[in-house]
Every structure is written in structure tokens, then in C-alpha cells.
Length: 489
Image (cartoon, rainbow, N blue to C red; front, top):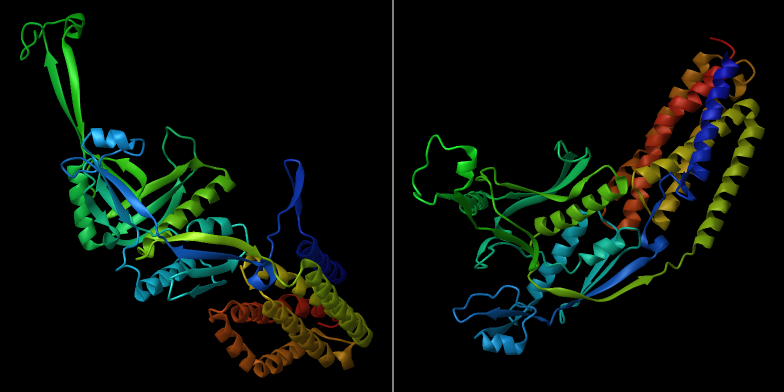
């Protein structure tokens, strides 16, 4: 029975190791894809996207009628048509001279950084040229980079305007927060799936404005029924055919509002009833069960929510250059370093087996299991791996080797006649000696994990997960393997 339990644990460790090093592949259409998440690399390993944002020198063109009202759909009007209709064209710079100040440049840079932080992006560099206002942004190259870059120059100017007069009814100052919500679509008219919503919550003053707007901007209907003889009366005994001869009409008058971000229309709508909650929930896309489509909607809503939540940049920017900079460390060099590390681990485990024989073999299996689980945790805990993070992995493996060696060394003299009580005692002594000595290291890496600089935080996060894993894993696996090996109860 003991042999079966030992074999079961060893097979489990082998399975975890296979998943960690080789992955799990399933067929997707005509290709095989690894379902195990890939590592998140920092800029020094994955390369980076460098984007230069320059202060826009463009202007906004508006066409107004003789009364000063903005003419809608004027984009297709020629100059001759504008003149013939008595319209005038006005050019308004995006950035006036009084906007182009160092304080506004700094505030714009801070808003960009705040957007990164709200998106959970910690691996970035921003630099500001205070003379020109240009901002250089450097972020890690990954699948989300294009989406992030496309929103970098978004000013975030939010407006709710009257669709006819273009009067601004609400703006950024009325927003309290914006976030993403999603849930099951229970509408019987659509197939079951998940809906994604952009949720906008307004301030106290904004809530009052929204209630007033939703009360005033509604669709109203007037019914008029006319007969050929009397427009006010109908015969109560009239048949259906006779009633159908009356002429009926519904005159619908609809006041609508238009929601805009950076002058671009997001939606035009009216309200069915007053909104008193101070919240607007706008559906993004449609109900879906497709994971990729759903993630696309969530990303789209998240980008919009972050733009609204972080405020309106005082300066309008445009993307000047957008280029990828390759890492100085190639994938080939990274693989060579990994093979060297694995070779050193292999030699160390052979030494463990030679020194402690059967106990050393069990300890070696347990050690490989911890290494495999650590690699999986780093992937699924979204730890960003830099060169310092890889160095942290090496430190964790060294610490675990020291722990296992200490544990086995306490059992060395009783290797041939080992009891469970002796294993338990050795385990407690090893834990006490090992973790008391590394308390300063634990304090240091906890502090490192809160540092905003990616190389340091990467090292700190890897070390925290590694030390926590050493504490938990060796109780569950190493300790139980050696207790099962013990001959006496």
C-alpha cells in the first residue's frame, strides 16, 4: 500500500512536470495549440513598443448657419455650397497657445500613467520633453499592445449634447467613476450569452443633471383620429370595417441626446423614463458565448472606462512614431541559459541521490515537482518576468535545495531504520531553522514586490511565490513521501 501511495505521488509529480515543461496541446481548427498560458516577459526580454506622442497642431472645422448654429452633416458640403447657403466656416485649433504649458504637459503625462495603472500595466516607461510637450511611451510588446497604443492619444473629452442644438449638457466633471460590468443576458428575444456593459456613475450634481435630461429628452406621441364627417365623435355601434375607414395618425416628437468621446459620436438616444440612480449602463457589442468575442468586448469596454475614469487630458496629442524595438537578449540566448540552469539542477540532484540514496531519490522527485509548480504559478499569477525575475527563480531553486538537503541530512543516520515520528521531528526542526534564517530575505522581497519598477518588482514577486511554495509544498509532498518511506509507525 505504501509503495502504491509513493508511486501515485511520483506519477503526479511527473504529470505536473510534463505540463510545466511541454504543455497541453489540443486541436484548434487545423492546428495544435498549447493550452498552458505563456510567460509574461518584461521589456528587456520581450522587446518593447516605443511610441512618440506629439502635441497636435491640427484644428477642428465647424460650419455654422446665419444664426450661429452648428450645421449637422456638413462634411460633404463644398465651399460653394457653404457660401450659397449663407454658412460660415470656422477653424478652431485643438490646442490654443494658452493650453501649451509645462503644467498641462505634465498633467497629460500623469493621466497616461494613470491609465496604464488602471489597466494593470506596470511595465512601462514615460518621458516628457517639457519644451515641446512631446511624450515618449515605452511598453512591453504583447497581444494587447496595439489596442493600448490606439488609445494613447485619446484625449478623453466626454460630452452629452443636445442632438439638434449641440448644446453641451454634461461633461467629464460630472463623472464619478466608470467601469466594466457583465452578466448573463436574460432577454427572451436573444440567445443566451453574456453581455458586456460600460457602467458610468455620475457625481451628485451629475445625477441631478442626468435625471433632468432623462425627463426632458423623451419620445412623446400625439394621436389624432379623423372621420369624414366628424373628427370628435364616432358611432359606438360602428363595425370594424367602418372604423377602419377613419384616418389615424401618430405624430411622434423625439428629443435625443448624443454621447461623444473626443468629438466622435458613441450613441444617440432618448429615454423611456427618468433615471434617478445616477448611472448609465451602455451595452458593448451583443450577447455572446464565444470567449474570444467576449474578451474583445471586455477589452473595448475597459479601454473606454479607463479613458473616462482618468479624466480629460488638457492637451490633444497625436501619434508621430510607433515602432518595435527588439530585445538585446534573443530567444536562443534565453534557451541556452535555461538549459544551463537545468543542467546545474540535474547535477545537484544526482549529488543528492548519491549522498542519501533512496531518500535522496524521493527528495529529488519532490524537488522537480516544486520547480514545475513554480513555473506554472509564475505564468498564471501574471508575474512579469525580467532578467531579475529569472535570477529570482534561480535563488528559489537554491533555497529549496538547501531546505531539502537539510531535511534529508537530519534523517541520514536513521536511513535504514526510519520511523514516521523521526520524519515529523526532522521536518519541524528544518522548518524552524530554515525560515528563521531567511526572515530578512522575506521582508526584503515583500518590499520589492511593491516597487513600481518592473525589474525589482519581478524579482520580488517571483521570490514571494517561491518562498510561499517552499513552505507549503514541502509539507504536502516531501514530508509525506518520506513518511511513506518510513518503516515504523
